[in-house]
Length: 107
Image (cartoon, rainbow, N blue to C red; front, side, top):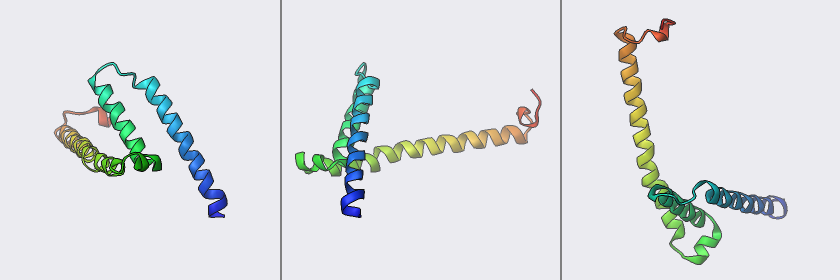
């Protein structure tokens, strides 16, 4: 069942998702500035690193994709979590000291 049904279905779904991501990248990430260029390059590297064809083209694509997931992605996640923690801390002090009254229904 796995070799005849699930594996071909997974391969077809991966191909459709790769085409969808590629077409969305062409429409949305139209290279207008340096930030969009970096995002487009990272997207292409991730797609090549996760697909089996990437390893056939260059043996270091999977390692590069793994590094992108571990290092820059981790940095962004930590920054977002620290920002959320600081915001929650500031909001809790505003509520405790009575500066923020909209929480209790007042304007």
